Length: 287
Image (cartoon, rainbow, N blue to C red; front, side, top):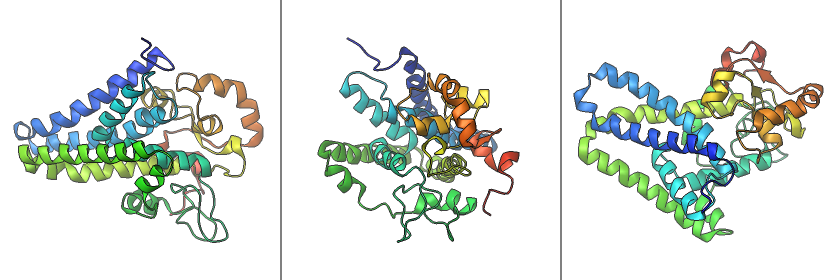
């Protein structure tokens, strides 16, 4: 039986997802045996790991599901939901809408197709400021009834998304019973991790041109970043060819780099989460 749908190298992000979940469990189980300062350091790593998973493992899984058997993809989606702290199925639906709008600007009614667009809550045709997008995105609920939207086309997926969310809540409840102090300690780091993911998304599109397909994203070719984040730095390439597997995204860049240069694809020298430090973004960041 064929296990992997696209590449045997997908065993790497799959194992990384298991490691992430194991790390989350270890944070709770070993809390009482560690000094608070060490748990604080680990909390920061936990926050980074959330953004790392969302923008690497989870994101690639949306576009190129890792497994050939359908049931294995649903099982992995459940595992990811518990690891990252929200329904992978719901994230899939929201993210695909992101690719429909490609961080589009507001229309005449002040709306955007892409609910994650950096322009959605901006003013005067400009992107939202980086602080608002980073720290407020977690609390926004202007996406409507997500399960209801999914149910219109995929009733089972809507139910599965609810099941994933219930499993994550169940996981948190078990953790609270085991050590409620540990859970409360790491809650701020959970929020911080989601903020880091939003920060990452902000600089994936600040300086992009939502009107030209080849410039829909902002790329970073930092080798370490792309190695650790499973090719997420090639974001302009990804929006141009969303179904390109993460192991082939660099080759895609080599094929189209002259066309990208002609179109003016925005490229930064840092990883996306550190885009505020990139000299290429000087004058672009809205404060």
